Length: 126
Image (tube, rainbow, N blue to C red; front, side):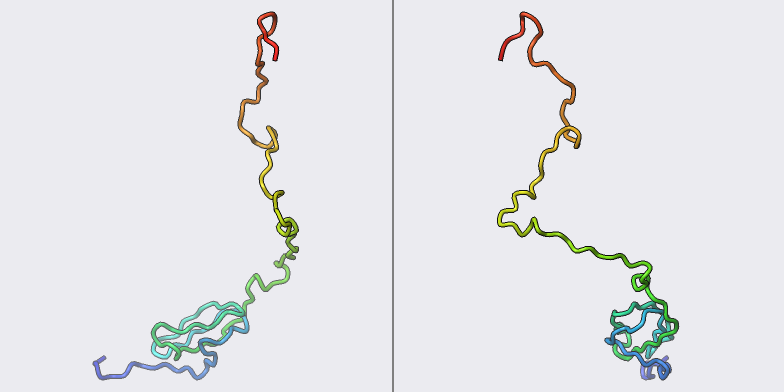
């Protein structure tokens, strides 16, 4: 190709979706570039069709096959329980500080019973 020749342009007449538009349906889309061959890409619902680094806003998109994302499937959705933040709404949230719970909860100290005084007549009184 010489310097004065114009770049080849590809037919985009069957691709009606423009960059910047909201994706209405998740699935496989054909990316119809203005100056290069078509490619395919996955887009999820509520995302935005991107601009091309090379052909900018001249890129177009066409839905090839609808394929809902797993997050859109009701069988895989989990109910979100409300978060209880009542402790955070106290004027002084002193109950939020860690509490030492003892040996059963993982403190690391000598767990054997150690006698402080000698047994017998040599032992002292406290």
